[in-house]
Length: 247
Image (tube, rainbow, N blue to C red; front, side, top):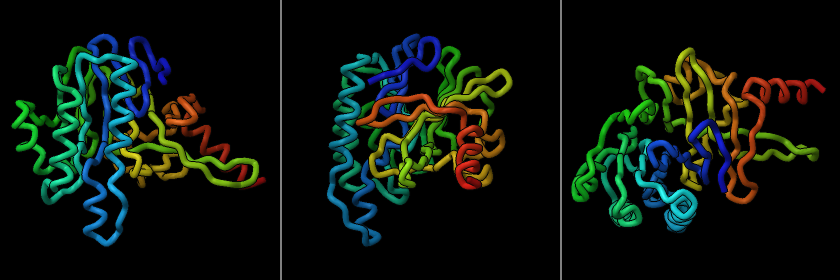
């Protein structure tokens, strides 16, 4: 499952592949989320990582990347590294054994450094490889030429002819002056995301997106069953929703 985004870049299953540097880019896996939910009284089965691993295996089979770049929030719990996180992150690293791995620090990645250090992997706030700049997106940064971030967990909501609301994760792609910006969806099946076509600018999570706005950004819906589809720009989707509400 893939679709060309721009020259040398392909959208994969909740991922992006950059052919020029052989990099598979993913974001916001939030490993260990079920244990966190259990601690606050919401009990769900430990099934998230099994699904994420299937997504990763499909991406590896399709692209055979030389390098993996995680755009932050590999783990979920702010306060510690739970036994579930240790187990799942260890298996995650095993899956990419023999490939170069880069970890970007997200706002959830407290206590990730000791786990990464055991594999000789350094946790960084941002990295630049050629013309590509990678960061999480939870704080302001100076944009480079082609920028990739996560954090927002972008999604869109649409209604069918029966008035039933559907929500789909999506990748966003936009141009800001001399910079391109790509926002990846969360790979976690438990993370719904920000409905960018119904949210106000002030409701966006990332200060980078709040500052610049998202209405001109292109939308690429990513769904493991339906596939990858290009939708109108966010501003156009908002206009369509407004027209539907009026009529």
